[in-house]
Amino acid sequence: MSQEPAGMPSRLGPLPSLIFASRWLQLPLYLGLILAQAVYVFHFWVELVHLIEAAFGNQDALVKLVSSIGYKSDVQVTALNETIIMLVVLALIDVVMISNLLIMVIVGGYETFVSRLNLEGHPDQPEWLSHVNASVLKVKLATAIIGISSIHLLKTFINAANYSEKVLIWQTVIHIAFLFSALAIALADRVMVHAAKDGH
Image (cartoon, rainbow, N blue to C red; front, top):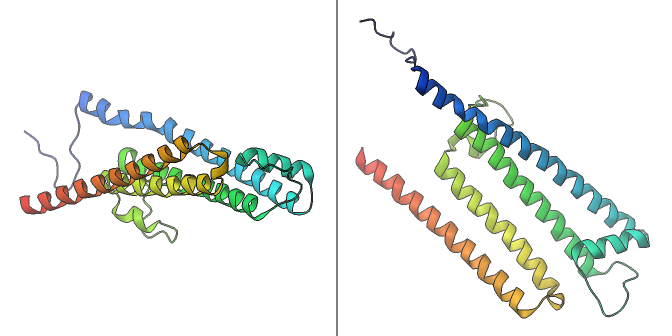
C-alpha cells in the first residue's frame, strides 16, 4: 500500500471532500455583509452631510437630523443645539462601531471558517487576526456588542424625556444581560483553554 510522502496533505475521499467544500457556501454570506457595510458607509455620509448643512443653517437638513435621531422638544427646533449635536455624533459613532463589528465578522469569520487570507507579514494585517479562532472571535464580538449597546443606552439617556420609564428600564436590563453574557463567554473560554493545557 502506497503512503503519502511526509509533509504532504492526505487526500480526502469524495464524501469528506464534499463536506469540507461546503464551507464555501458561506462565501455569499460574507459578500452580503460587505454590501451591508457599504450601506452603512452611505448612511454615515448622509448623516454627516446633514449635520454639516444644519450647522450652516439649512433648515431642511436640521429637520431630517431631528427626525432621524428621534429628538422631540416642546418648542420648535430652529437651530442645532448641544443635545442634537451629541445625539447625531453618538449615532455616527454607533455606525462606526457596527461597521467594526461587521469587519470582525467578515475577516475573522472568513479566516476561521472558510479559507486562509494569507496576510502573514502584510503591514495592514489586524493584530487580533494573528491569533483568531472561534473562541477569540466570540469574545471579541461579545465585547463589540456591549460597546454598541452602551452607545444606544447613552443616546437613550440623553434623550430620556422622549422615552417612557419602561423603555429606559428594559434597555438598561438588556445592556446588563449583554454584560453578563460576555463575562460568561469569556469565563467559558478561559476554562476551556486551561482544560486544553491540562490535557497536554
